[in-house]
Image (cartoon, rainbow, N blue to C red; front, side, top):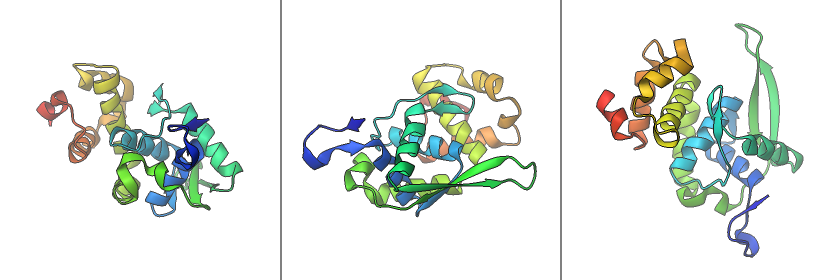
Length: 185
């Protein structure tokens, strides 16, 4: 799948988007959920990945991004290593950059801004990142006026312990808060 205007080397291929996000994060990013939410939020800020997202268990999810990861691995741009959490033995992914992304893969963000964002996403608690992406999705895509009740219903205990408030603050820091979000913060 090619993205872009179809003219020569300005084509953006989906595997280059994965490489660009990993490059922006300093060459490594931990977790599929984190990568999904990072790309979703970066798209809202100008990444222009061209990947489509739907709602899934962990919020905005892109099957296109999963396919892009597979392509990036097949083309030698990315490697995925699997580790196990000590707490419960669940597996998680560590993505590492092996090739270099094309400059246009950073979209309107550019490499510098993409780097700031990706490092921020890498340092943010993954549940807070998931909640932030979900609040954005519920507010902008599904257009819930009362997104707070909806996210509590969908996410249950994940919203507790101040995580929802941190997610709303995180969105405000990114300038992605809809007015309904700002009123609650």
